Image (tube, rainbow, N blue to C red; front, top):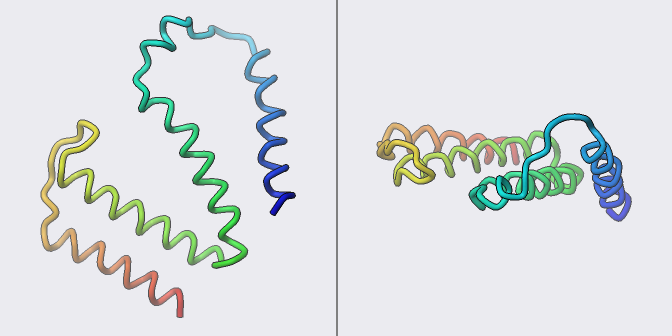
Length: 113
């Protein structure tokens, strides 16, 4: 596990200088300050997502991890749609949509066997 963490940190250490030295426009401090805080969560959550997947695949297997990812995304998207969160139009969690999510959960149960 320590080796995987070193690998992730090593990637960050290699990528940061490249990003800083690459040619092209840089955002101004004013632009950075005006950016909505939600915009910054993508990088952090993406890193957590990848780290958890890397750590869980040896324990659960690739098929199970991928199935859990899909179910988690579907349940979250149903929640976001139903309540109209994040500025998306509201779409009620109809029985058919909930049944579709239930079938995905059933798929996870079957993969686990």
